Amino acid sequence: MLPAVLREERQFRLLFLGQALSVVGDRMTQVVLPFAVLSIGGSVADVGIVAAAGFFPFIVLGLIGGVVADRIERKRILIASDVVRLGSQAVAGVLLVSGHAEVWHLALLTAVFGAADSFFSPAFSGLMPQTISEPHFLQPANALRGLSFSTGSIVGPALGGVLVAALGEGGALLVDAGTFGVSVLCLLALRPRVVERGDPEPFAADLRGGWREVRSRSWVWSFLLAMVVYHVVVLPSIYVLGPVLMEDELNGATSWAIITVAFGLGSVVADVLLLRWHPRYALRAAAIALGFASCQAVIIGSGLPILAIAAVEFFAAIGVSAFFTLWETSLQEHIPEQSISRVSSYDYAASAGMMPVGMVVAGPVASALGIHTTLAGMSAIGVLAAIGCLSVRAVRDLPRAAAARDTAAPAPAAP
Image (cartoon, rainbow, N blue to C red; front, side, top):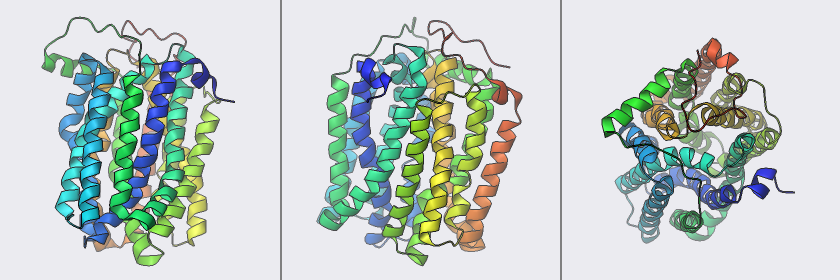
């Protein structure tokens, strides 16, 4: 039986279906792209640079994307972003298939993809609540979105392996480009609820307004700081060092795909659980889950057999899905809809926008200290940051507010 939010919320159903297929393509690309760089003669540093290029635009454009999404129709932003990402993936695929791809080509096109994503992500965070008519459906909707990412982490690598074997890395990117076309068709049919935005203010005033929403809530900026540490310190283990370790010590893409699939299975378990489990203190549970999520780096570098690594990553994935879902739900429950994209943009700018720093630094640090030592240190720092976040009272004691949420007026600031 379909979850109630899919049965009863037609607009969310359209949004979800379009994005679910696109996510499969993106998860496939995350596995394919590092090996595409290596296949054209790129180095470990090149893998890090190309991966970082996809996140660097968030530093420059992330906050701008949030302001734009709170000023104009969010659906239009999503469509434009999907069209740009379709084009960037198609060009990268053609260059690889034709044998003309160079590392700088892939880095530039990945940056174009990231620039479009800088506008898409805050707009999506704001648009999703507009497709929900009942507040109690917010967490299940976020859990389903997480489930699409989790399923993509299972299906994507497997599909990527099949497509690379049949069509090469370029062919796999062309398939990803096609998924964005499906997403555009679903978005064109979407009719979200209209949000009253009031009279537009100068751009700078809107930007300052988003910062006020963040600054006035200690639970928001405290969690953002912990998210910065997770994205800058822990996640380069997934995007850079993990694939390199698999290539050097195990069976390359095959080993990485096994780990990624196990991680996806753990995420599915968490997302299904979150369809029904509503913790009384969502952000407290999210901070605890963030600590477990930070363990994934040390697990990858543990030296265990590949199946043992995959088994432990299964449990780390439960933490990853739980903290993302409960964090997004907390924002949507407590931040007014006319400001949610700007607040989300600080989330993306502080997390995804800072990831290039970690990705560029991870390779040299691993070369100096050793890849296994570096991976262990990544997890240690991430766990300490999660504990620090949990020590903030506003994080521990933030109540659920879905039933009382007033979307027409600003929510009261938490202590």
